[in-house]
Length: 510
Image 1 (cartoon, rainbow, N blue to C red):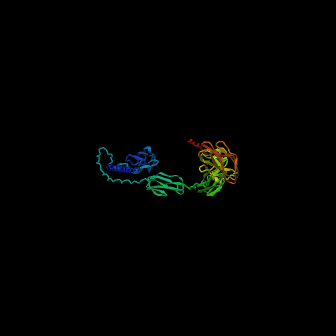
Image 2 (image 1 turned 90 degrees about the vertical axis):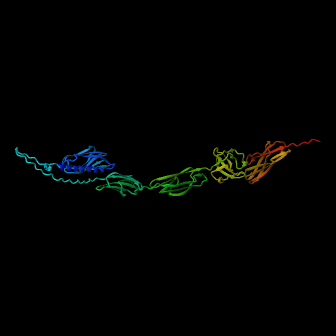
Image 3 (image 1 turned 45 degrees about the vertical axis):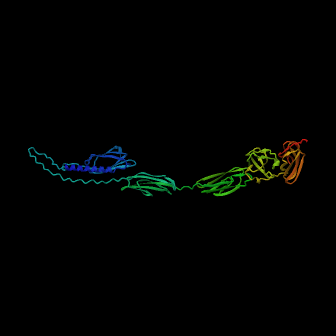
């Protein structure tokens, strides 16, 4: 009996030590938690049913290896009906989909007791009256401790909890992200990168399709998983239009002789320019005729990947001039002698120039059409008067018949104060365009007109004529002008002068 008690205590100590050892080897905080595992009875007899009861959280199933696996965790117990014939080691594993926890167990077995094994005497029956012999005591055998059980760990597979490569399709040089997390392993190799920690992230830029292989190993097992990434060769980039220009962007009808189209491209296999040009080299320039009206030119650059376009407008306008002041006007002919003006032109009036003449002392004259009214006439191009989109000196010269281009009148004296009557002589300088005769009359401020007079020209030039006017009264202000009837009918501007008559002083007789 003493030997049995000693053996029982020894086995209890062994079980307690194994349970403590198992607790120290609990899984990481990420695995299911084993709170308690109880063996009932604690020291079963050989062949006696044995029940294992557990309390775990975070697990779906329980394995009792090497005997049974995948027991629902919420079943909470399992009974070995046939028991065990000898002390047995077992690995208790609580598993979830992503992780597991385990605990090593030893099931001690107490051999079944027999009378011989107890060392006690066996009672025998005797006849009445027969003396009962004294019992013979046999000493108990010396207790020999059982050797401690040898634990052989049950092999477990490494668990690959996370293994991903994204994206699975990319182009050469594109970045892929590789992530992994492994438990129950002592070594991780990711091909083609080599040894890696149990969890981590890598980045790769494959130039061609490749397979990434994860190999997780421990002392007894290895597992591997592979992921293939497809790498496509990127298409060539779209063409780039570096330049597409047209000069001038605004062409003047009848004056701009041509326009220049210039272009350059990158990565283009061919270039097409509409309208007119069609297929062209990938870079170049062309001079083409001015289109008849506003035109949109389109350059299309193409390659295997696709096409790109660029567009440019060319505006075609008529020659035009714009007045810059409120002092411009239209005359029937060039030169001041063609006055008076028949149309005052406002600032901003748009005119179509037709002819040009640089004649007389008045400077440049332009024959124009006033677009607003359709009137035609001559206007002077003084500095600051007109802005034209062409060089007006390139306009054709108008054929001007014999005409008076300029008349200037100079009274002398231009201002007089004294005894009257007084004679004021006016000199007129008449400028003509060529050979011919000018016919005119002198016109005075008192309403008197002279008889008809004439002056002949043998060619372009200036001639002078004079007129004497005797003034008898004391009126202060006068004017004089010339009225022409040939070669055209017009009257010059009125030229003023001043005369003040002073009465003589009469001395009394002595």
